Amino acid sequence: MASLKDIKRKVGAVQKTKQITRAMNMVAASKFKSAQMRMENFRPYAGKFMDVLNSLALRVESIAHPLLAVREPKRIRVICMTSDRGLCGGFNTNLIKSTERFLREKSGEGKEISLINVGRKGRDYFRKKANIIAQRVDVLSKFDMTLAVSVADEVINPFIKEEYDELYLIYNQFVNVSVQRPTVVRLFPLPSVGQGTENDSETHLDYVYEPSEETLLQKLLPMYVHVLLYRALLETSAGENGARMAAMDNATSNCEELISSLTLKMNKARQAAITAELMDIVGGTEALAKG
Image (cartoon, rainbow, N blue to C red; front, side, top):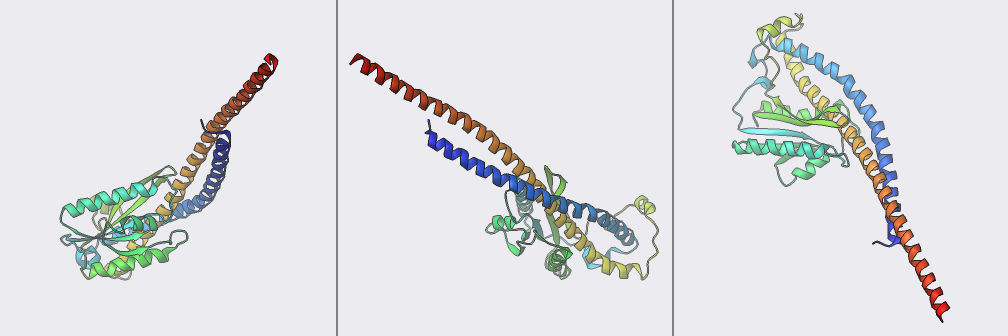
């Protein structure tokens, strides 16, 4: 059995850890509230933007913009969005596993794959396991649409110049504090724009466009990429802080259980020490009495 002094030291260490995890939980909760508000405020805009863009794309030919071009997918690029910091449960682990599985699947089909990392954790993991052509680290603590535009600029022109054939985005879709679902979205060629059925087109509002549909499409399609990337960034930010809040809450509960267990063990050790001392006193007394 460990000595009483060692157990007391362990209890003190766990109590300090509990203070740290509780503080991190409070910080994550504060950040989560702000991130969730930003995400929920942007979702309606993104949805309406997609409605208008789909309605517009249904009225033009698929060759109206190079971002709609479909080519044989020999070269693929993947944007992987993770967090910059850890201590957020399985948030990064689940996403990295999904990305690895996707890369393995595409590599097995003979595709040439390159990776763009947004977030330090993904960059650190894939540094020696994939062909990383660009990275953004230490940017998720505070960001705006500028970050989405910057990432989009690195993928739009190369696709138009036919430097690669398909682009995928892998990120954690926020469901709730405890659930962040790894999601794979194909960005190029744009999968959802202009692919509605005739019944779908009848349900859309009949917008009147000025200038022409083709001219608007030239402007809106790059914005579509900005909107998708920014939404993914917001989902990642909210999911990271929600996952960290849940992880730190679990860690605090585990610390409390461990303190309770160590306290019980400490009391038993103290009682054993007292009993041993009493036995020594009784034994000494008996020895003196016999002498």
